[in-house]
Length: 66
Image (tube, rainbow, N blue to C red; front, side, top):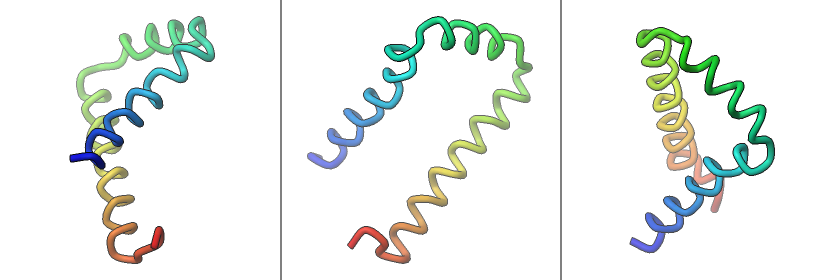
């Protein structure tokens, strides 16, 4: 449970950094994001999920962090 809460905290940090560092650039990026089709957003989402799963799998199988 502790690891899960640490990961949630890390997600909040990573999500908040771009807005804190460059709010104007994030606003422009969000406008561009709103113009994408649902299919494009879906592909981006599944790609991110796939990349995350791949990273987790590699770390688990190779014990790279041990």
